[in-house]
Amino acid sequence: MTSHNDEYQTPFNSRYCSKEMKQLFSPRTRFSTWRQLWVWLAESEQALGLTSITDECIAQLRQHVTIEDNEFLVIAEEEKRRRHDVMAHCYGFGLKAPKAAGIIHLGATSCYVTDNADLIFLQKGLDLLLRQLVVVVEKLAAFAVQYKDLPCLGYTHLQSAQLTTVGKRACLWIQDLLMDLRNFERAKSDLRFRGVKGATGQQGTFLALFNGDHSKVEELDELVTKKAGFSSVFTITSQTYSRKIDVDVCHALGSFGATCERIGGDIRHLASFKEVEEPFEEGQIGSSAMAYKRNPMRSERLCSLGRKLQHLPLDAVATYSHQWMERTLDDSAIRRISIPETFLCADACLNILNNVSSGLVVYPAVIARRISEELPFMATENIIMALTTHNVSRQEAHEEIRVLSHQAAKVVKEEGKDNDLIDRIRKTPFFQPIVGELDSLLDPKTFVGRAPQQVEKFCVGEVKSALQGYSDVLGIREHVELAV
Image (cartoon, rainbow, N blue to C red; front, side, top):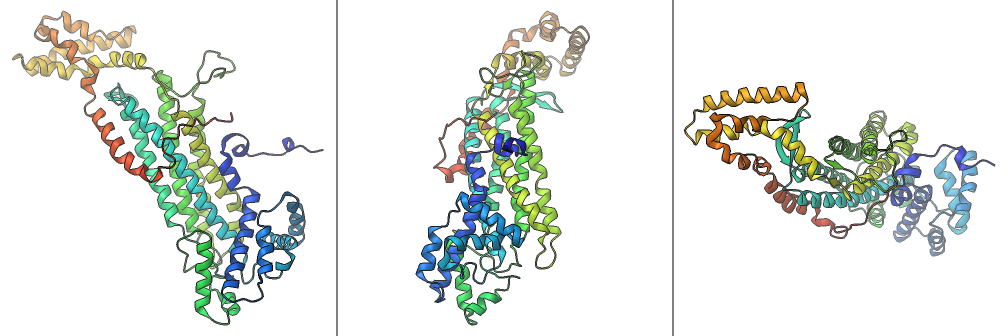
């Protein structure tokens, strides 16, 4: 007997994704949504005067909206015979609701159920992602405020640069995530329902059903749209809604994938410096060979899935550009794969971000040591300025400290010893006027500029404003457990 372990299983299901997102794109949800769309169509057609649709028809349809396990095999056999998935499901629904079998899908084309269902899934998928993203932003904002005053080395070109703070760097991540939040919101707000449009989008079959009454066709479109929970419906469609919609939605998710790889890369570098680490659980193994290692596997996975997510929108772009006239069916197979995978991949990335942001570990002692190795060179300008307050020539001060700096750099680079610039300054008579000021001149907190104030202003202002519409999910501290 064949086991499911003998067949390919997508890692999105077995390893990475939330129960909610997997359920959204499950066969039961998809085909039950088709049935619900048929119910809404029948209800609306009856309300507008089609007497062939009785109360008994609608009652039977409503009773069997959720497709049951034992129906899948029957429908699969019918699809194999008919080579048409929508008609197979019409047949299966009719078996459960025999009184309604003749009015299911009345006036509609296949895209009535397939496309409208996809738009519902896009809307609900974005809702799920938005709620997850808000939680991540809130957690990172709390982290940023906690460490807004902790100085750390800044890096440009991945070389030591002017100091910043741990919290300020986290705000760089948050700012990008707020852009993703805006993109998700915009993609969701731009969604409109396809509605009831017929085979090429011109509503001719519905016009015939209502004996040429244009107002009833328009009202039918509006009724079904309202039942589906959409505030507006496309006036213009072909057989399908424009695949440009998929492009816009998937691009928003792909852009988020780039953010994930960027954040994951920062955490991986900081882990290599031993300044900041992602959570590391008791019993976790970092390497099968090197038992001491604490590899940043979560952030590495985040980069990997983020990279995948960045490339998935290319499927939507190519599909849209290859559509001809009112529709070609070469959009079907690829969308069955690419749209669910794009949402599942974004969901997986958010699960990791939530897990990591819940338990980032900061090592202030390591950060302070790394600062001490670089700060003497960074402090040279402050030392020069302090000397000028004692009537010392800036040019002379510059030359004196330049010579000592090169000597200290040689010791660091060629002898592998600690930076001894400050000791050289203390021992050189030229610098005696400011020796008593050296400790204050070397206080790391005086090198971070307005970073703490920027963090406070950003988190209290921009972050709070962006999250204010999500009060029902704010404050959720639940730790997301990763399956592996």
